[in-house]
Image (tube, one colour):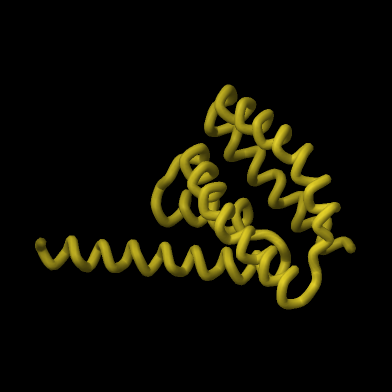
Length: 128
């Protein structure tokens, strides 16, 4: 394998490690990570389309969220299981509906909607 391919692969793995570490830290600190960390960085650093970045992020968050919930619940006692289950049931319907909508609108619209959401959340956090 040429040296440039090895260097490029190493850089790619380091970027993935940075994304994963940031997502894990943000998940543990704030309960966020996929949409606010993984998706934008997969788009920015790897050139993923919004759909591919979203799907990849959701796959990663299954593991990250499960381990975070286990740590928060098992170690610190910060999980109310019944409430979590009651949140998960409509969330399943929401993710199925959201995915169906995302597949039917242009990727550019998905990008703008996501950017608008991030700006709205940032403004809300600043004003509170």
